[in-house]
Length: 190
Length: 190
Image 1 (spheres, helix red, strand yellow):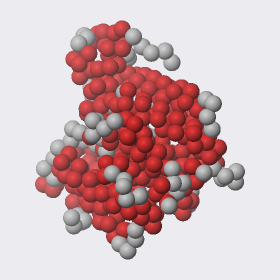
Image 2 (cartoon, each protein chain N blue to C red):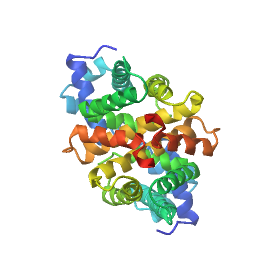
Image 3 (cartoon, rainbow over the protein chains, first blue to last red):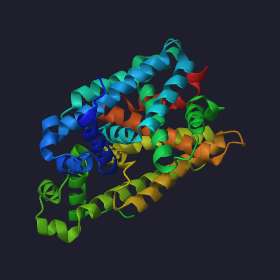
């Protein structure tokens, strides 16, 4: 999915900033036009509806994340791949915290018009974690357990990343990566 | 915090069901009155505003969770306490999935009128995990790392629990507990 530029980009950035503050439902097309500094006519010329704006934003974000996770796994297996995936996810959250906040708020919404495509991307992102986890586990591990563990590693990384950036952004990224990895490394069970 | 009963309970349950479907912002007082089957006068007699309803619901839920987590740790230390906390959190998510969905959607909202009290409860719930984690780690571990790891264990458990109950509710609870614990037990790093 190519990244939008120009007026479309200005509108998307304004909508994202608003949604990170007050949620998607709490953001109106009037708010977006005002924040973007464009006329309502311009807004509707570029996006037919609020749903189209957020569908575009979320799918662009999740597609970018999936690509980054796939690249992170290249040439790595098992625990080494998990380390790279956790580091990459934290980097993406730091690079676009507003988007990460909005995606976190959407994870268990089942009433959105973009449900189906968002679910497909979610599945792809989790699959990158699941592959690395399956490589790390003993051979007899079943797929459903691997998939639940993928949600666990993804969920822990997302929540720690947002906790860091929303509530304690002065911490060094390397400390946060180390803390997340320590959660999974077995240090809790010695 | 005593659990509300009677008309107040009917209203709270209706509001929670609606918020789990469409979010707090997407739920209006008119929706709540209709779903609860009460007149608008009755609704406003019991709760001055929508914010008061959701403040009540979230604080009741988080206070109940914190009490349950505290009880789960009694007589246990370190990894054994972590196992009990993970099991308890998953039980609570299973017992009230609608509330867990709404709380998950609220974790990084910073624009709510109940921000301060919700933040205090969040801190207490995470502290139960942090104590158990500190017991499990080597003595030289610093508090900030322990706190980040507490968010990680809490976040992984919450996301796996919701993934299970929203998308794959036929799985046995014991399988889900085992998968979450496997994420932290060190099996990924062997």
